[in-house]
Length: 153
Image (cartoon, rainbow, N blue to C red; front, side):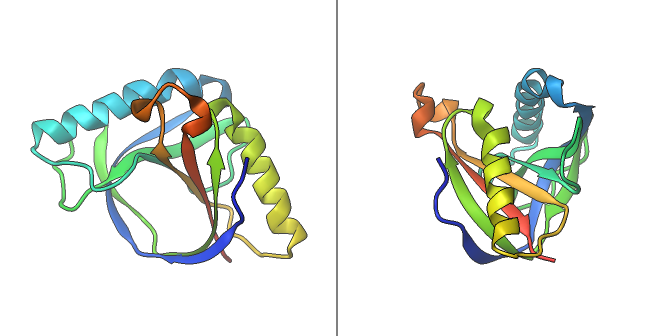
């Protein structure tokens, strides 16, 4: 289920990320360990995330996902292992919120992108999703929320 899309201006956000390039089918196997590695590195450096976990794709995913998984941070972290500094861009975006389990995200993105095209909105190839409420908040996937963001061209 998607909420009514909104046009918003986002601010640039400093982030700690791990860059991942994987076949689409590997996403379920790779995300959890990458998030764990990020959180462990942040904790070792005494840094707390300043927002929800996200994934940022500079191009629309196809059979391969080439993206950053990360967390916003209020201060720089020292690169360690796969963890490095990055940024989410300041951008005018079209955003909706998807409610449901992660297995429904591909269909949600399809519906959202179809809506964008039907509305004649010109969006960039990049996109990001923020996991604002997920398994850490409860076992019922119907209560999970993921923001879907497409920057405007």
